[in-house]
Image 1 (cartoon, helix red, strand yellow):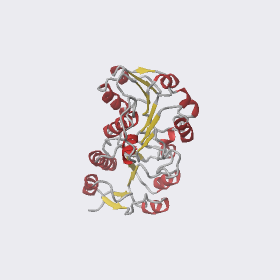
Image 2: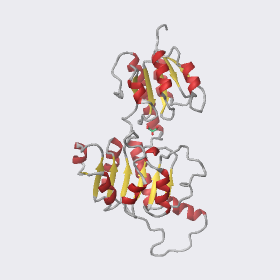
Image 3: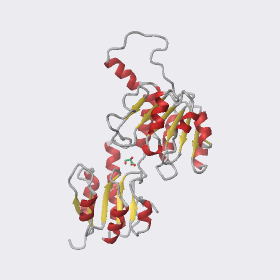
Length: 324
Ligand SMILES: O=C(O)[C@H](O)CO
């Protein structure tokens, strides 16, 4: 059909449902490689396209954005919650719309709880100990960890993911929820959470959960000084973005028992090189950025991304436009 909008989908492996929706309303070209599309290919393929469908791993640079604007691209939609891979300042200077998938946060919240339990109850350490044949006998303190029950949990950032984790943890019988961030929130009051400055949150919390986006303000915010404020028994969890944390400082804090343990789904860099000092630490549980990796969530993320594109190209309200 003539005049159907043209969309470049930048990976071949996005879930089918969303791609089918797109095909019903648009002409779709799919870049067919398991690696993220290189910029020089993207610059060529975007010519004549109205929309770009990208993953949360494809860096969208100023050069790509300027070229997209020149080529008449009307909307860029990322199948991700986070938008730190996109040069938002450059995008702001264009009329290109931006879409993402903030409605989908429950899987990341679940995974945050999984990391909390895995680190506090030493699940991976215990598993590895058995594999090494080192399970010899019971002693009163054998493999003791720390429970969530009656603990103080501090959230650095308290958006949808943090609030969802907090709701889940209330059922574990935690004693107090603290949160820091740019402002006190009504949802925090409703959950009985206390709004507090970051340093005091770090001093008081048994568990510190990074639940804020990566922005120029949060980049590198977890320095050696911040780790030194935390309790020696504290457990640090990050499921948002690795670059919020100074990883050298984190390794130092874990090796020197300045904090007890860390559970990380996000790191800097990703993928983490096999010789990275975080690998092999008994008190650090690592997962490969799989917070949102359930089949159901990824299907929904793809459908929202397709709907964002279709709406933007048909002059309708996007389900999740990021207003710059
Ligand atoms: O932002 C997200 O949705 C996840 O981290 C995947 O990029």
